[in-house]
Image (tube, rainbow, N blue to C red):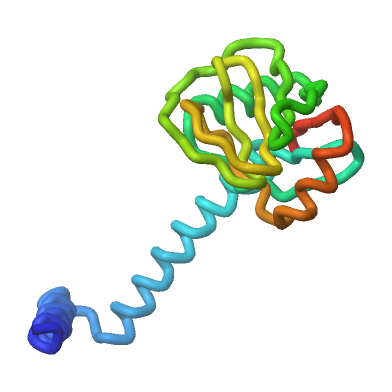
Length: 166
């Protein structure tokens, strides 16, 4: 079945290319050009004004931010300057701190893991170095630290988190 589908796909691509009056190399060149334009647009959006940097104390961490309204609101807040959040240890597996205003919520029952960043009660940021299960809005995940490194950053007392725009 897989082979039949693949053969039909190749046949259809050849028919479309032949019907368009383009040679195969012209068709490939046009598709490549379209892909470059699309990737340039995405790259432009991914850098500059839309990039947020997070520091835990003096340590910069790489965050894979979620694509949701809460993160957009956080980005908007950071337009006016750095967001500084005083965090407090809680439960032996997380740090919690007030963002200073409410963000849009889309809470879902979630089991977190080390490195997860979530919104709690609409106005509290939580960063995990352990695991918990609760209803949160996901904000992101710290991607460059393992569980031991997250524990080193977060389990030795209260910390300050700074979020800024690049």
